[in-house]
Length: 115
Length: 112
Image (cartoon, rainbow over all chains, first blue to last red; front, side, top):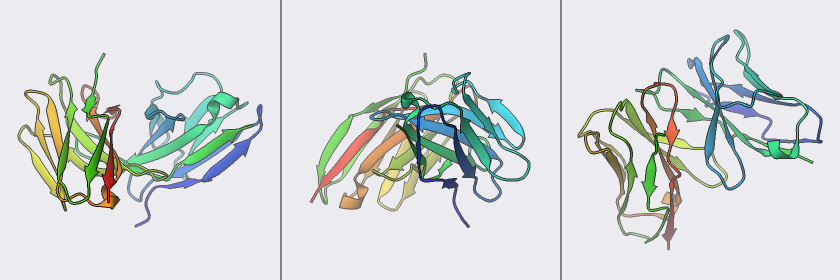
């Protein structure tokens, strides 16, 4: 049973380009979460999605960032017109159900470097 | 503002010794407490999800207890090994059952 798959592992973008980060949850999981880890900091919640629905995007910047989890295919975190401050590790996690009973299963992360 | 406190911030332990550390939280509106282990250059790995006051869970040499009335959880590691070196994070679900409120972690370093 494959775990949470994220790709790419490393992504380098120049300022102004777009970054697309992909996440395939564990089989059977319909809850997907995106977290960001800035250098020397902990995990910061960005967005929570279920299939085709954004449930909570309160942790995601209003501009340049968007997320989706389509009916078919992986969840995508999209960052438009990247800036140096977007350089971070982005972790995706999935859960079987709500977090009162189910743990989060994390992917290995995508490390975004903006030059 | 809800605060999840972990102590100590870091801990050096001799290989073979046992150790424990604490996660403290506001006891109102408690839903569940999570423990994760995060090794350097890897991703967080779930250890336990605990919901009931007095709950005790065990996974190999690692165990955890939960006191929801006084608002704390202890994580114990028996006979520490070098592979136990990691940051141990606790996180809470409270009013919302999909938002986790994370502690800053306890960084554990096992000295051979």
